[in-house]
Image (cartoon, rainbow, N blue to C red; front, side, top):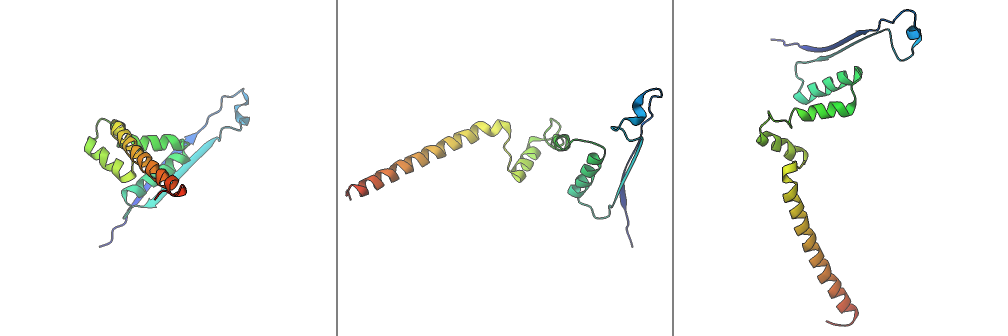
Length: 133
């Protein structure tokens, strides 16, 4: 059995100028635009679908930052369980706002340990330089 599938994203736009103005000569507008993006869909992964849709959104003039923000809003919103959000955070090494205090305390503890080790090292180096064994 053969399975074939194709996904299409289509965008059509026309610009109708206001007669009696210089809008026909306005270089910012193209009188007509048509985009058709197709891809074989038989074996596309979810990430590949998102990449395809990202290309489509770029073609129709979306800002890359807006695209990324919209993609993140699919995960980080009130309708998604916190457990699922945390899985994504772990996968991409992200820290959720509510975990920042704990992370800060861990950094402070680690910095204190480093400071203690460095002080001990500096004391030993200084003692060695002064001939103290």
